[in-house]
Amino acid sequence: MRTRRRGGTQVTIGRVLIAGAGVGGLTAALALLRLGTDVEVYEQAHELREVGAGVQLAANGTRVLYALGVGDELKALSCEAQGKEIRLWSTGETWKLFDLGPKSIERYGFPYFTVYRPDLLEVLARAVRTLKPDAIHLGARCAGFAQDDDSVTLKLESGATARGDVLVGADGVHSRVRQGLFGADRAEFTGNMAWRGIVPMERLPSHMARMVGSNWVGPGGHIVHYPLRGGAVMNFVGVLERADWRVESWSARGTTGELARDFGGWHADIQAFIRAIDAPYKWALMVRAPLERWSVGRVTLLGDAAHSMLPFLAQGAVMAIEDGLVLARCLEQFGVDEGLQRYDTARRGRTRRAVEGSAANLHRFHNRALADPDEARRFVDREWADARIAERYDWLFTYDATAVPL
Ligand SMILES: Cc1cc2nc3c(=O)[nH]c(=O)nc-3n(C[C@H](O)[C@H](O)[C@H](O)COP(=O)(O)OP(=O)(O)OC[C@H]3O[C@@H](n4cnc5c(N)ncnc54)[C@H](O)[C@@H]3O)c2cc1C
Image 1: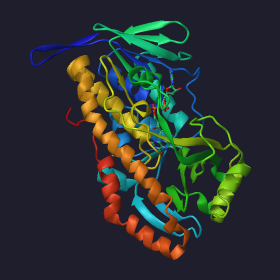
Image 2: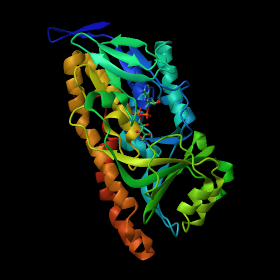
Image 3: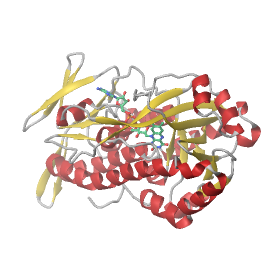
Image 4: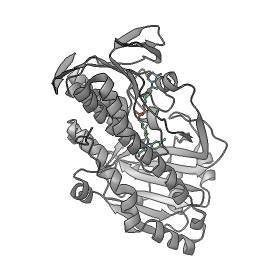
């Protein structure tokens, strides 16, 4: 328990319970521990090992990770993409989206990393355990909670309970904590699904082994690929308008044949990539109406539990990272009641804008104008003009979760 004095009043911060040891839950745990607040994290999985997939961490996320002392460790396991580009699905024609590498540091102060997700989790978990070795409880599935004026009790599926001053639902898209606060989930299918896979770089044509993020856009689908682990592997995400897959899961498998059929007719580089993927995974893309508030009493939400978004701005995990730090700062400075209110206020508008910006990219990336190369050129020149790119991304990358007024 930690007590601080602020403006003559006592702010008491006790133990924070966190449901979910994903990117958001672990970032929050690390930020809280570093500010001197006790945490216990309850994760349903028996090991902290996400299925292999990549995640892009823009400067607004790496800024937080550096502030939490894990930036250099992560850098050693990441790729620092030199830039991002737009490519046309049929001809492979290429346009610059933006420069990254040194440009990201020059413009935003921090790098743009592409990271293998298990590496990110491991770095965060190690940092948490360095500060509190037994903070993370594995095989601990949260089933519900009860709260009163003095405390909140988390109920685990095993029948065990844990008592704390705050409960944070960082338990992802299917959050039990969100359901406990606001009732049954009402997810709506977007008519799109995402294919995911990773491939050792040596299995791709050598001209594809570049340190850039590529976004292939086409009518009704798009494909994003970027290097991971210092360029040892390439990550693949292929999104397609397809109405027959409704499972929102990291672990649902598909086949390479099915994936190849879905992207039949796309450029030869894409065909070569797909042939090299041994284990493709599929994920149905759902949307949820924004919540009017995230906190009730001593219980709040964070990351996908609060604001799941389509992955078309590559900001879902980054927003969870920002949430984690801002939540820790709010609790540390203002205690439970005011802290949770300020957290809600600080984060809801920004994450809502990210949700909306991600959804808007769906129509851009899958536009019918992309079917014809001449029309596509005009469309790309207009939609990815410098000023429009800056409008879509600068507000994201410049945000400073370490210093934003609370
Ligand atoms: C195809 C795809 C590509 C993406 N690419 C990017 C990208 O490039 N950049 C980016 O920033 N974001 C990206 N995202 C979004 C990003 O993956 C998510 O926003 C991010 O994982 C959210 O983190 P989280 O901690 O909130 O939730 P999660 O990562 O889902 O973690 C939730 C954790 O809670 C645990 N849990 C769930 N229920 C319970 C329970 N009842 N009890 C205990 N534990 C529980 C889960 O096991 C999990 O460990 C992408 C998403 C998809 C689908």
